[in-house]
Length: 205
Length: 296
Image (cartoon, rainbow over all chains, first blue to last red; front, side, top):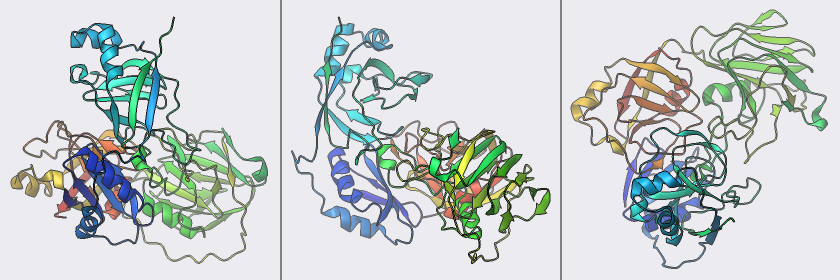
């Protein structure tokens, strides 16, 4: 763990493992909004902004994080199944670019166990790690103006589901009817950091 | 759009002429960045807070963010208002009125703002505040994700919270605006600047950067920084805060404003201080900027 300050009230913390990012995030999140205005996790970092009129130092952050340990199998983490119809607009291109058959792309995507690494890009948009390496492809050269809600997509080492319609540059391989974003719920984002995710194929006749 | 709830039919304003962008803003939805929700809220928070204070409100109450101009608003109730930010010619029922000062508007009168000579954004706060249904605890319009009220256009009506107009406003003399077409911004280098050479870092302060035409509430781009070596193409996504300075490989610097994405894949080389973050909301395309960053 390496804590860097960016000015007097923001910090960027680098971590060695994604598990430690998530465990540390869950610990720090309890400080919102009393100590922290924002705590944002990334792939291997956490960015922290202190709340107004709260003075906090790098060593204070270090003290809060030093005792954080990753408990294997600690289950405030949910297991979520995403029922998916694999008929995305980019499915054939993904098969061509990876040199796989469409069926192989689908089987590789649904067989893998995924973990929510972090959220970003749009409300409730979760970056899922665990994608089979042979499905790793760059984003589209030019993003689509409108990706439909529920689109199941891949890009680089991640898979994701678009919680709402938005522009987007990921490759669309399927769709789900699962609602990932409910602003009236106590936790608006269905997928939380550390949650386990599986894609389950729903075939249509 | 009609943002007037039935219970508030008594007090409302109506947009007669909408500027290029007219939004309801407050101090944003805070603490949700980790789930992909940008804080949003007023771009120039110092001016926003001042407008509310001058109107006799707590600082976070929803008010109007006016981009450039012209803007005309008719009040269907009496109200006390204050306008701050980029200075425009302000009239109430054709009476010239000063910025940074509370004014009484009588029922049926029209408040008019001309485009400002310098700067981009002005704030019109109303005693009692605008009443807009909150989304995740805030009534602000988020132009990145479309959360909160839609941008206002001609004919839209917005409810005003009922309030006691006779109650005294404990206003103070407001500081004068320092907005021109040149901005001196200050802040700090961040951890991702370590790959840059000392020479590149020491030269930045002497450069005249120019704001590109690519400007919005999400952020503005500055041309001419010429950092070296060129920043890395890509980093793993990491958190973004308002005021962060990102260095994509194109060589521009991106200053993030209120509707910034919550994570980004380019290195963040520094951050503006709060004063400069507010000032950056007033930078127009073509304005010149000097950026003086110190070590954290």
